[in-house]
Image (cartoon, rainbow, N blue to C red):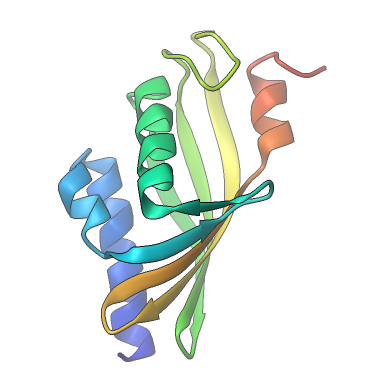
Length: 134
């Protein structure tokens, strides 16, 4: 898969998320893919549960790609996640506050499938914007 094709795949994933088309959003992820974040690794099923909770907590979210760099089988993105906190987010009850959070992500793509996904949102910034951390 070319770098250009890999970048296009990541752009489509973001577009599907912004349209709330979850079946299309999940399709590029290989069933055996692993998602890494700051605290632990997740299976695809665990990532689906987590992402579904985030989408419900921010029903008006919009994900914007700010920067994208690709080399070999990896695509790096600096993205911005914006939305209004209207549902439970882990231990944080809905606040009604608008958020603007930077997220760093890397997708390792093999044969049109995301095999590994590193996902690092600015958790401290998010919690501060929601008033959950001073």
